[in-house]
Figure (cartoon, rainbow, N blue to C red):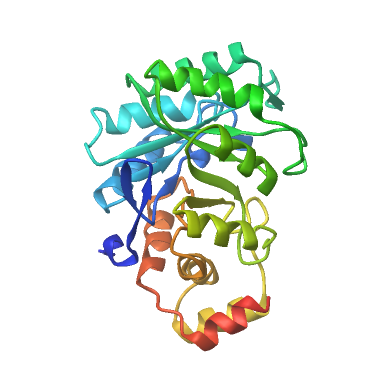
Length: 286
């Protein structure tokens, strides 16, 4: 079994987690909407993740909605003491599965209480404010109002730590001026490198960076260089892409998602890969 401790740990506020976690988005149905095709498989992959040493799960009550958190609770509650569950607020699902902004104070409060109820906890370890100003990606705009609403819930003891998701460097700066930000979760992988400078500045400040779609999301990464490096290492291209992220910066926490135990084990095995300097240089040029 892969030893996840070898890739080190990083802090998220008062909690310390291994740098290899698990993203629960794929436990819902197609399009992250409705129930999974195989609920038993979803339960199994969660239990296998924790059994394998994963101590950081990323989720949201809009996955399903509600479905993913209810599966996490069924699979793992009562939760291991060292398990950190991070969730997200700031969006709601339309009746056909659309993703819609939900930034009003009552929306933030409702989302936090949905997460508490469906996860079966009294307080949430980490809540990321997901910023949806633009469906295409991060877009500038003040986050003061929704973040203030989340901070109020933190003062009430419902939220322990606050993070940001889908944000610009300016919004991170605005958030840090208001409260402690323990993590930033943005799109980043071997090909999508717009956050290079942000990652480095967060690392210097001791703040975790959690890339979503670390393997490209709904369109998996494809590169002849990536395939060549993988072939030389006797690994899969996706394992190499994950190993590259681990070596890219010590504050990067991985949350690759899957609904398959076999695929989970394949992802976790990326922790065993050691990329040479030459391999890193080749991958950096992609």
